[in-house]
Figure 1 (tube, rainbow, N blue to C red):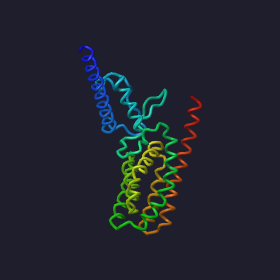
Figure 2 (cartoon, rainbow, N blue to C red):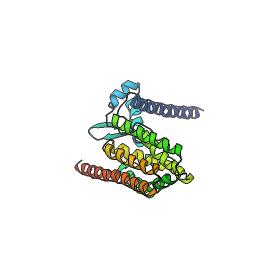
Figure 3 (cartoon, rainbow, N blue to C red):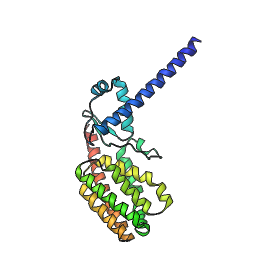
Figure 4 (cartoon, rainbow, N blue to C red):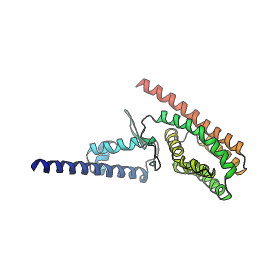
Length: 247
């Protein structure tokens, strides 16, 4: 009987600890979004966070580890923990956000994007309705405005690419939207704001071609958009490898 009571108490303690860890993770995420802590900025250290949330450092450590796995935080050895995204991936049925090597993942996702998105853009140019085009223009303008203001443009950028996919009127393509969204988010989290002008220019070209019902133009504009992004990612990957060798 005593052994059973001890086992039950142990299970409750494990459950309480798990619930506490999840609650602190939620609170830390809310702190990042509401403070706000901008992308590229460092969050307080473990000691300060533990004091702020009234928990032990081990609980903070687990919360940070979980947010790292979800692509929100990045731990940089000898420097601290930095915010690399301010939105949780709501649609990730394949669990891609849990893969640790974000640079490799981003390149692999680009391979998939190059297979899919130019043709999706071409179909959007053929099948988009007038209502679709109004929504696409609105999203393009909103992405541009948010980007120029220095705020987090990623959620609206994802809406923009999702809208293009839906303009294709292909139900299977719509089911692939979460993969495209994960690709957009992974890339944006790594590059931050380094391609603002290129993004704005190619977004405009994409929307213009789709509105002109020009499938070839839409396909080319999407290829150009992805090419700019991939070139930037390759440069970052080289720098990342160089830094890793120096450590």
